[in-house]
Length: 222
Image 1 (spheres, one colour):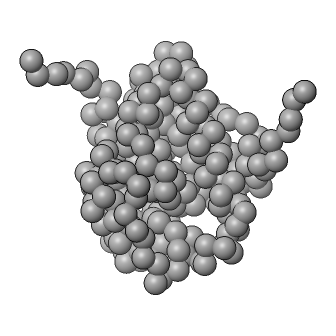
Image 2: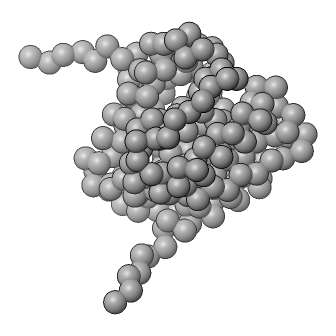
């Protein structure tokens, strides 16, 4: 007897762009921003322009992962936040079914999606390929103190943000990047003067560099 998953963020299913999953060398879980469509979000993957990369997009209920600011008290975003985190987990599990090791999976997101990607990997650490956070950081109010994650974050992480984005205060993104750095991530943190709430060309270049490095053949010393 089949059961229906009550998680509303799984109702839409997954959209897949780029390389076919049975041919891709790298899988990017691409998490959209508030009210974005899959096509809106994939513009960043399209701009990166790398072959051999598959982009897998879960779609939030009503295109919104959680109702309030990522800096609101955590309980105010429940149960949507935990459901969103579970949706990311399920997406990664599906990619494992296609043969992708954690090290061949990258989390990438913009705004709400970047916050969700960062929160997921901080709460549920694993040897993932990398994190790309376009204008996003860890959850909680101003006084939030994040404990160390349960395992080292041994992967490259990119954080890009504006110095004048009212949705994403610079101090919060900087603190988030530093939390990842303390936990072991190789962090590339960049601040863009007067940038609007979008993804700039330099961020795309940084994402391309991170993904390109993961696509290089791994060599071992003997």
